[in-house]
Length: 138
Image (cartoon, rainbow, N blue to C red; front, side, top):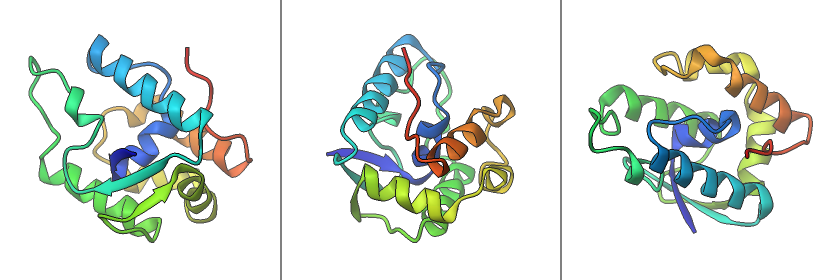
């Protein structure tokens, strides 16, 4: 089981191998690859720090517990009609994204995210909506 907070469900769609540190990138790549290769993997939705936050570099100021990040989590979970503490397979989460999220929703759901300017999250949503799943990340 993989523990993820709300907004990381969308971050994984836009993940292209970039991150906060080599350790963070390695961990996110492993989680991304596990979900891509095994969409039946169970994801437990959590409030606050998750399996990705666990590898955030200690040498950088952490944003994992900031109110704006919690607000982003709640917005994404609400949009997907999910709840904290609720387990779901990655396939089920992708289906909810396909049914409930438009690429343009990133503008409002993730308005305070520093990664938003890359445009990869919108691409990831399009990929899910087109039935392609997560992209391959080297």
